[in-house]
Each structure stands twice: as C-alpha cells, then as structure tokens.
Length: 227
Image (cartoon, rainbow, N blue to C red; front, side, top):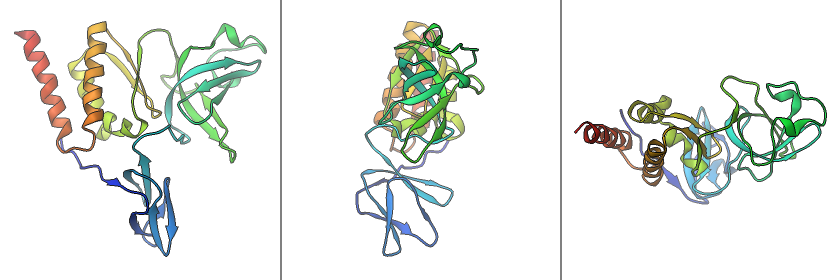
C-alpha cells in the first residue's frame, strides 16, 4: 500500500492558476491565481483545489455521512449537533419510524447519538440531515471517538484501506463520520486499542508510509496475543 505526502499550505499561498483549476473551499481567486485563505491541507478533487483546515469545525457537504448528537426534540423533528458551526435539522419525515406530530421524544431525545447523511444546505447555511439511507441508525451502544475533521480522509484511507486494516486485526464495528466523529462498538479492550491506533494515525497523518506502519503495528499486536 502506498501513501502520498499530504501538502500543508499557508494563507496567501498560490495553489495554481484559475484557468486549469477551480477554486474550492478555503480558497479565492486573485490575478488569475487560486490562493489559499487559510492554513490547511491541500485537497485536489476533480479540478477543484480545496484547503481543509488543520483545526476547526466540520464544514458540511451534501451527501456526507455524519455522526450527530441530538440537542433538542421539537414537535416536527430534532436539532442535531453535527460538529458544524450550527445545528442541523432532522425532520420526522427523514427518519425510519412513523412519528406522530409532537411525539418526537419517544424516538430520539437530547443526548442520543445517531448516524445521518447531510441532505440539504441552503444559502443561509441552514442544514438538514436524513436517516433514510443504508446502515443509518440510532446508536444505543458503542463509543464515539472525536478527531479533527481534516484527518478523516487519512483515517479512512484510500478506498477505505486504513479502516479495512483496523477491522481486519481488531474485532469491532466501526463507522467514520465525515464530521470528525467515529463510532466504535467492541469489547472495552478493543475499543481502547482502536482509540490508540486512531490517535497514531491523527498524529502522523501527513507522513510517508503510514498505512504500512499501522499494518505492522497491528500485526505485532496479533503476534503478541498468539505468543
């Protein structure tokens, strides 16, 4: 497995020309060049140049899978914290249950955790999420691990390679939200090991050969258990 070096860019740094690239998140155009407006990791997606902040809150994108925590039950839905600057709205029509008007607290209440997908973002940055997709549910068990949203792609790995390694060597169920929250369901000692591995991936996210090092570490764990 091959790792690419993640390029860190700085505010006002020229990222490319605006003719052959498009200005994405965290950038602006000046004198025909695409400029970074913040410190972050350069992300090239199609022709778009994006700068993902090294630290900070999650910037929602329609279609992202997220882990939310219910802030408040309303008569027609719920306000859900998805680690963004403001809460998202989950309508009663966007859950897998038939919820009567005003009966929302019977299904989800303040503090409950759930898996959802970003459904809509309007011009005022108001967000809606849905639970109507495959493998989305209320989480009644397991642990949530918080990470920097910018490190999520590294934790997932190319084509899910890093998560596949964790599942291969540690018995667990794991769901990675794009918003910097990871749900893990396993025995307590396995949850603790997953946390340690994720901490290592986070701290070494922009280094070469990380996937191979993580695999060697996990293999070593298995050998130690067998001995």
